[in-house]
Image (cartoon, rainbow, N blue to C red; front, side, top):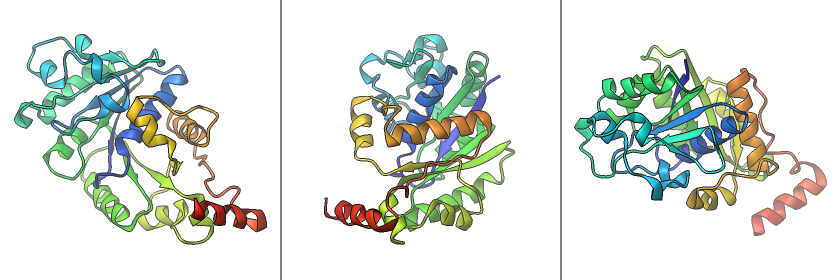
Length: 264
């Protein structure tokens, strides 16, 4: 049976869908079978981030309403033979999707996949509870901004009321130069504030928005690609190695790099 993990954030705009997509791709590159589900009606964009928006024939609402079989709605992601996406509808009625319906879809997927990732709508309204209720693990995505950390704290508190096997934290958009100069909270400081150690740290990168717009994934040798590879290994093997975003920004030459980066 698959590990069913919901990715949530509380606050929108922290890169949750992008983090989910690239983590799923990294696990797929390890030879694992991964299915990702978009549960955000109307504001869905998981199909766009994974580059399958032009191949959507059926979606989650069609599966729930019996207009197609689950297999017909799944779309294989290019360049990742074991990664599939179940898109959501842009025009469906939210009442058509219930926690029980999503749970049934997730249970069916879990029979044929190693991981089922659920992309949770932003906020902590009904959509959040529907998505979390279908999972047995949760990953909260945040950034070093105070507002995002505050919302992550609220989300973590709500998740305590669910009978989840595991709740984890990913910190996205970390700028190593600002952490080194004490202008941004470090991943360790954020973990201490939220009372949960992060399982993944993703550096700030100009490439990610471009990759999300084109449906591509980071090169495995790039900084971002290595960060997602570490994250995927931490999830699969229960490790705790974190990408060092500060490396290269300490010392004399590091100070010069920080100064140049501020001017770019």
